[in-house]
Length: 101
Image (cartoon, rainbow, N blue to C red):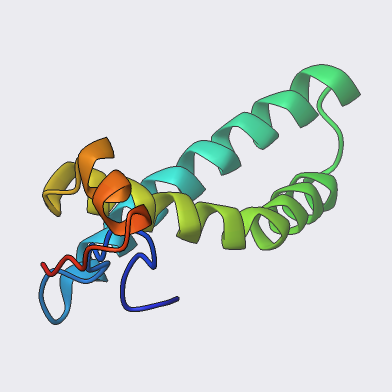
């Protein structure tokens, strides 16, 4: 991940260790994924054997982990990092002026 936005100069890591909180968001996403997959397996396959549940949940947990991590970091940065859309910063940097954060 780059240190900052190449257009407006916004830093992506406001302080050291900022994204540790994103682990909790990832845990919530993973729990929701496991519950949804478990219920879908139950209703679509009419209560199959335990190994089917474990396989389906493990498969989707592994496949969706990269997305979960990215979205949790994005959510953490948006909610607690002070990042807001400021089109005038992008316009200034596009016109040649330098910005610093």
